[in-house]
Length: 220
Image (cartoon, rainbow, N blue to C red; front, side, top):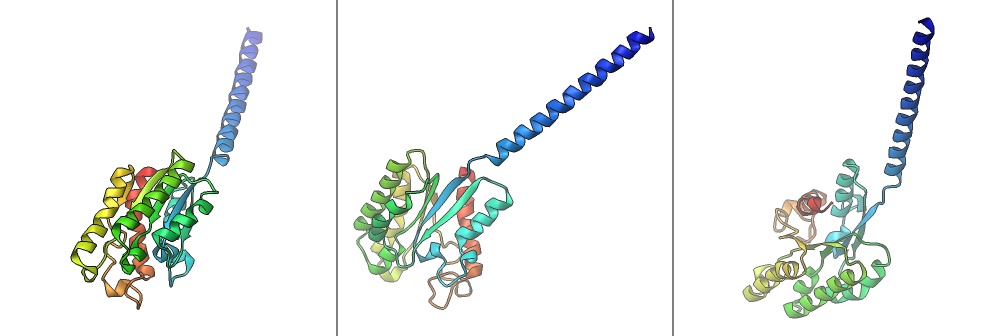
């Protein structure tokens, strides 16, 4: 009888040891899976608004979006492709260089410099569509976001209306998520803009980051 009891105890200990080893193996496998999780790229392609003109790079809204992503431990890396003074035509010529790195989410913020120069809306539309087509051709599975912009009435009522409508029309045509107005709650508010009245302050860029995050988050 004692022998039977002893045998049972030894079997139980053996099974427990096997379970512990299996548990350790499962934990190790999970750790390896997490450490090898593919990091996806989010490319912000735009003007000085994206580049963070007049700000420390860490204060620009793409960097603030990266901070939010990191706090949630999401596997995404933000690439700031903003360039001060960039027009849609210049962007069309620059996009291929940035597409050499994998792009999983593409945020397009271009057109404001065209508007300030009075470039015909039809021309800007054509350039933006060309950029979108280039991104889609290189990365067919890319998720895309269009950042809407607006012009002041001083540019002419019709021009301002056509310019504003260009962004939602392009977004709809290309199945892109839309940020209705990137500078919402910032544009035209002196305390949230630098002395030039165009570029946001660090506080203003915090609001831009929130405007972007509201549309970006569901795509992550």
